[in-house]
Length: 281
Ligand code: PT1
Image (cartoon, rainbow, N blue to C red; front, top):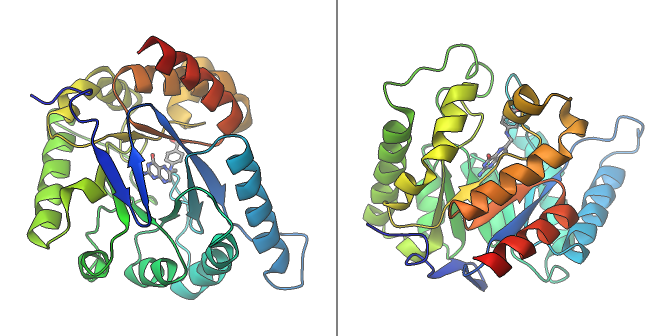
């Protein structure tokens, strides 16, 4: 069995090598069109770049740039629209950012253009299952997050079902890891994510966090994304913008359960909380 401390290896993330010997914070940068602007993409690009620089100043270890929402019920965005949202942001951050830039996408063409524009990591909620995704990654040296999802964002919360959620998520992630290795992708480029809220009931999400240790047996660093998610609202109450304290609790618990990266909206608060966790661990 690989314990959390034994898996303190180096995560190869494009031009960066992250030593995951303390909990790392991935800051979320959503690139969404500005509803007040009629002048093309300039303002939304500028707002995203500005937010990314703020997150770096707040202590983010990685930036995660996303142009298509994958929250439950979210409608898909076209390839061209997604490209026009995220690529200008990555281009603007390339050479300016002092931390790795991750692209949150499942579309191989977005991955390809993002890597060409300077992205250091691909964060894929479909774990490279789209045709062509594995080939794009095999030709690069960027980091990869393989995430578990049951179904697709439009319908995944309608009737999630598992015999044993921890075993099934673990089996899926181990299978996707093996497929990556078979494609010549090095193990030290990969992190795994159980995909909280992606085709999971409140009980499924709680089982996964309770038994996070079991996923460590696969032998790779774990990434956890619980920030502001509805499972926290179901437990503590409050809508999306009232979940800061619950989100901090979730990040602290995740780190104490051995997660090496937490994906969050509230970087400054999370960095402070995880400094306390690191001092104790
Ligand atoms: C995640 C994640 C992600 N989450 C990774 N990437 C989202 N690697 C986007 C809700 O229940 O956890 N890991 N990219 C956002 N997705 C959701 C899902 C947002 C569920 C909200 C909910 O509220």
